[in-house]
Amino acid sequence: MTTTFPTTTAARHLLALDWGTSSLRARLMLADGTVLREASSADGILSVPAQGFETVFEQRFGDWLREFPDTVVLAAGMVGSRQGWVEAPYLACPAGFGEMAAGLVWPMPDRRLAFVPGLSTTHDDGAPDVMRGEEVQIFGALDALGADEGVFVLPGTHSKWAHVAQHQVRRFHTFMTGELYALLRRQSILARAMPADDTAPAVAWPAQREAFLAGVQAARDGVLLHKLFSVRARGLFGQLSADAQPDYLSGMLVGEEILEALSLLGTRDPGPIHLVCNADLCDRYRGALAVFGLQGVPAVDHASFRGLLAIAHARALLA
Amino acid sequence: MTTTFPTTTAARHLLALDWGTSSLRARLMLADGTVLREASSADGILSVPAQGFETVFEQRFGDWLREFPDTVVLAAGMVGSRQGWVEAPYLACPAGFGEMAAGLVWPMPDRRLAFVPGLSTTHDDGAPDVMRGEEVQIFGALDALGADEGVFVLPGTHSKWAHVAQHQVRRFHTFMTGELYALLRRQSILARAMPADDTAPAVAWPAQREAFLAGVQAARDGVLLHKLFSVRARGLFGQLSADAQPDYLSGMLVGEEILEALSLLGTRDPGPIHLVCNADLCDRYRGALAVFGLQGVPAVDHASFRGLLAIAHARALLA
Image 1 (cartoon, rainbow over the protein chains, first blue to last red):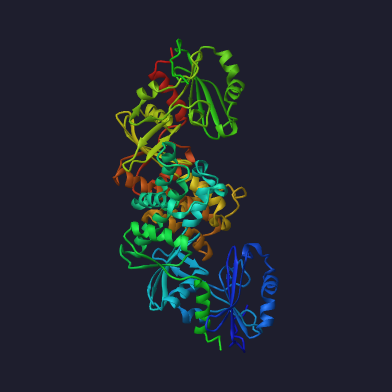
Image 2 (image 1 turned 135 degrees about the horizontal axis):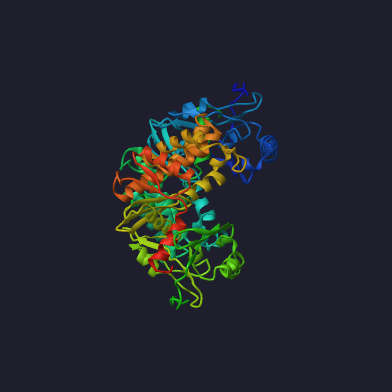
């Protein structure tokens, strides 16, 4: 693999790819962000065979690139991992637009296709931590907000809390909140007393808010491994209905995440927290943060595409 | 269901049943504990159909009872739950031998067959907690030790920490340690970098001790939801071999359990901790407790059978 910079890079169009574990989202844009084409599919890296990325790429975007030959392609997310198309090594924090742009990996010198590196950090105890894909969302949020500092929270399967200063991601922490929720909700003893996952009525979030916030409250004294079992015990004793249990559990895990993050940030008052997530999830996290006396501010939609556009500009890839 | 006491109870033999979720263990004893018959099978309550308990009981023990007609039967464990043969309601703490013996449920007045109740407690935050089966092990350990107080720890799928004073279980806390380990080790993203569960070499525990104790150490600052991800990240960066990851994860969860238990006990120095578990698991917990400066003392083997015998004597069921 080479990182040789293509001889001709400047282009009029950007094809931004947010290619993750379970989905592929794409946007063809002009330099000013005007969207010309947009697509998404379930071609996440888990569903693409090891040698199949080139084929998927050609099938999905070949026509676009022939229609707009003056296009540069930036791909972010797990597509740049060891299990993806081309491995783009992790870039150590602190890292900003400049470092990200300089760290782009161009594996095929004759093509204007680059992979965005993920970020790594090292914690006080020597443990490394990694993100891949979220860094682009953070840069997109920074660009959209015109901000250069703050705490950015990206809830999800592996939630990230990133501390940004001077336009750089200084450090971040990962929390296995979403994955633990899915495991406990679907496969643990707690699941047995809950409605079946796929038959649960699609109750609007406001109706579930109370159970969720009670779970957040329950997490505030930090004994998660013990408190988890109380979901079952409260159910046995009629204190918590089956319908309310999933949200109570969700609140407990999100509350634990916030408690731990505050401990790791070393402050109870980190200022406004920029939430990068979809509206429903942001609403949950805003409610949970309020329990801790914190303000959660939803940051921006489509942060990945904004981030890739900003990185393209930082590298002067767009004419 | 009736709890009418049989007209004739005093017998010369005790058939003690430890009938749990995944196994059935039985011992036919004389009043002095002499073992006449012993058996175990995989007829846990999960593998017995709702109306099938009578049939399994007759198949396994019909011959014994015909051979020793002067027998009283005590059944403990999940067989006495709502999903079992006959529900024996939870008995509220504090509870000692007397309360346990008085709380036996005799569903069939013409038969000398009783179900041992589980125990419940209510925590400071109003959450209930329950155990079913472990209480008999605690009473067995108390009987064997000739003790009437202490902290009793029963590691497992749902670990229990019980505070005993004046020969009574005063309160206890459950921790979902073992279940969380199994879920994370087999089904989470962490599992992907570990040896397959069923192909892992049966390495002797001493060889794995170092990774386990490193995990315990890592848990000491109480940010579990974050630290879990470090198992993967340390693997990615070559700090932790695939072989060492399961034990490191195990240590992290056991360390978190101890940290939380000390917080809930409200003391950093609860005195010697009586461990009720098999030798391998006790060895792990002793090592983990030592990291916290605590002394773990393995309590007794076959605690369930001893406990059922002690309860039978407390009720004067044995001639």
